[in-house]
Image (cartoon, rainbow, N blue to C red; front, top):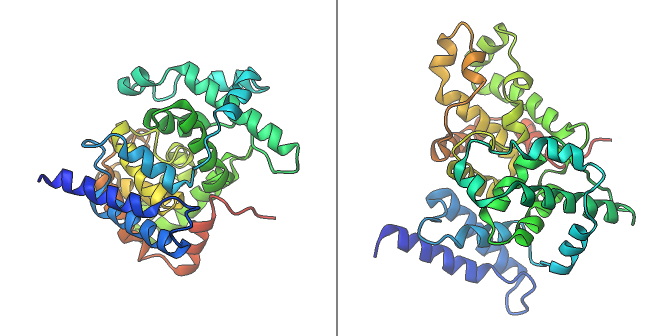
Length: 309
């Protein structure tokens, strides 16, 4: 039996143990323990999607706790037609992962527009019954792209995207992008502790995270090719928390640290990060957690979803 096949079987065994959430035959404690094992397996082995393409969609839906897939509801949102920010959506969707041919072959712009329209209508309707709502903001097109690429159907992509936005990083998609800007400030504070020399060099060139890391924080690194590496990074972020993306951006900096330190104009290097190497980035990010003060790490953990009054 090949190593890849063995890993796939391990995932299938845990997936069987991890569902359904509402099962009377399994306690919540048992389900939580299975999810803990699943997260550990993702960290240690990664998801072997090459041997079983259906594995990643199943795992993402499980991690996002997406169970109810109402086709009728989605079709009802779609039937409402263009939402009130359609022009803003169309200004972004045509350039979504524009250089990735595999994405362009699988995901048409019409699918992206339709999903984002439906998301706006969904939250417009829910907002009317006393629920905080969302609208389309910059970066949502890129955040939706991995779901449309990964999920077997547009409906599954829609509900996964909605759960992700509404539960995992709601502060990242407020009109002011409050969570993104907070994440960038935390990135600077983390880098100052984790690598004072690199931090000082960047600041000597008047480079803060707001200047060089905005796209990477805004899109959870989905703006950095190749897409297959982005998906592996997102396996990790969905399993352990999107807040860790801030440390993943720092990890990318550390991978080119010597070039940045040696450069008189480091922004030329940082304007376009090197191709993503998910395994290397995840490995570094995990080690960085141990070197952060607990108070700062707590702030990092909460920033994608905690609303400040």
